[in-house]
Image 1 (cartoon, helix red, strand yellow):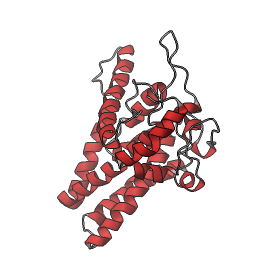
Image 2: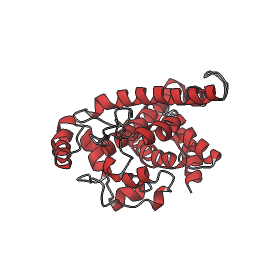
Image 3: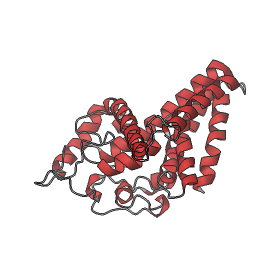
Image 4: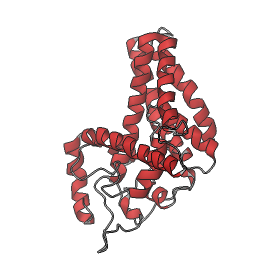
Length: 280
């Protein structure tokens, strides 16, 4: 099912681009409805499914997940998420762990740029260890960047400047939802550090869980985030709620919406960090 969803992703995104560009004669109100309907599907279902795929062991499945993120102009996430985020989560070395007091609109550009650079360094190191240059064609960053450029050119060729703008807008909307998920699910949490300077192993305590059945149904149980970080290769539909994980006060979509208003977000979440005693 995950592979089928990924294979449908690009055709559906192309259909949305054509509709938003006016190919089918839709009016402004209809285009706005199309943008949010398709954008939410790309961001909620598409991102969750691609996230699931990049954790699979089979290279073809991982490639499908990377292709979806590339369509969102965020292909580097296929490298940075498993190699950086899962290794360094809840430490200052993870760009995608939001710091206490950091609003979402500051977090998004910092995390995106930080994960892009960290992922590049991972791939460059891998190539150097194999006796190759970081600029070797085997570096997947060429696929991420080349694929993104090719899709933007395809949108331009198919529907003109309006099609290009529609494609970029949909990709940015999907990116925003992905970054909101990371922001909400790790805000302010940090691993304890021992006398030797090493951080404790990852535990359920470093992820905010939101095991609401409806949002879990739409996002393949991705809001059960603590179990995902404890068992990264476990298929998302099998993820369980972790009783030891800190709990968000509402379902993930509600909390993600609240995070768009930084002051309101801090009023709700910072007292919870204080009660946990694990604030960054």
